[in-house]
Length: 318
Image (cartoon, rainbow, N blue to C red; front, side, top):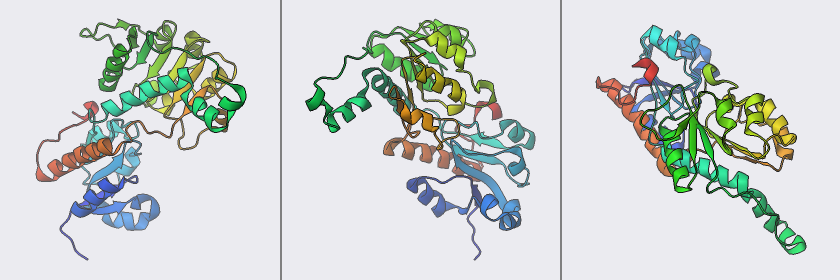
């Protein structure tokens, strides 16, 4: 059936709200490049835009199959799965959805800090399993307020996390590509140096090759037996094997993780540990925020087809 709606390629499943919106406005080819390569080859020349979530994989090889592709709209702040160098070479703009998810991710980072130090998930189980009645009060845990926090990555979300930590009277330090002259916090040039001077190390740096394995065994050793690792960035930023060893050997006190390398496959070694809180990548997973993310991604898409300026082009493609 013929249609005047523009063709777009969907490279990952979308939440119901976003999918309904995009279906109403566009002819959607849902992962056709994977499920039916022959059919995809027949429509590839008509596709001018790709839509995907923050974990979308958009390599050069996929872009090259669509000669008229001009934009990739990512629903998420992270876009490390998109080959931005290839996009630049091919004249393709990449957009994402920053700012609208800052609060949710920052809230979750603080929640993981509290869970890790106060052992809130374990306390819940302690009640449910009848141990409070049988054994009496739980052992005392670690205070969060007033503890030193180090933030790996001081972008939009990092600054929002810092704002919340300030309300907890936490001395704040950070590491980033460079010091931020407008911030009053202590700057360290490396993650290892930062880890050695804090109680909580919160990771919120972008993923990708440049940060892969940044939080390694040396950084964890520097964090020490009384330190906690919180990761709300990308799983690839942490050397997962080194982290498991550090938790098993009590090299660090504990961890709170919202992301994993290779998710949703999570190493079973984590499941046997009682000093780690594990979440299924829910940093921005509230109804309000996911709607705002979808709306911004769809606005970029609408502007593209209307010949208007794109709202949130990623820095590498500006």
